[in-house]
Image (cartoon, rainbow, N blue to C red; front, top):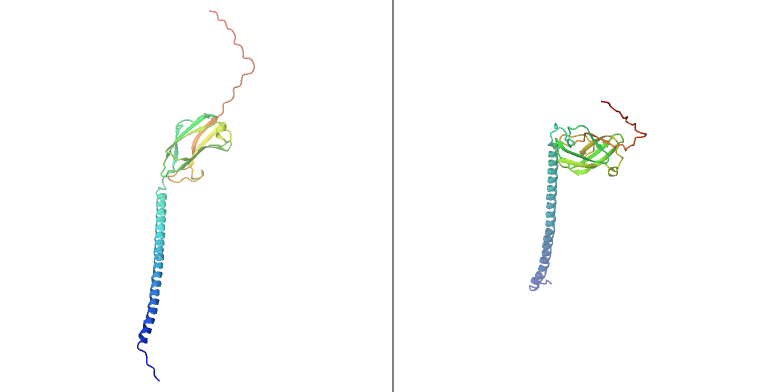
Length: 218
């Protein structure tokens, strides 16, 4: 026996199946849109990261180039920077100072193409291998002036002797023995001076000879 299809049932089945397919397609489309929205910020972040890295690398290269330009701008044929004494004058004869007095030094600089940021200055004595700091990491000034208190308690180091001393000035960022460079301040050690201790008063021993009483006749 052959059964025929009910014409009323077929459309209903079709109608019930159709929403299922439509709902699945909608969910698939929504998931695809969500994935695209998630991927978009990541892609934008990657582009920003690459852009930031590129800018940082470019900035670093520019700084390096600028630094190299400053370093190479000094003519290697120029002499190193030096010191010109103002007080006491460079033309004066050897100066002598009494221990426990205040001693004034002043100087300016010559042949500086590159100015140092900080300056050290100290006094050296070869006889006792001692050094006496008078400027420590001081800000650079075109003309420097120092008043040195030579009292024993002020120096805080070995006692000052009756000897010859050397004033030494150098760039605080470099060792005092560094090789001088063109246009840069080298270690200056060409000013010499003397320090002395007055001898204490000593009374003469014995009696002074009497002056004879001379009588002159006219």
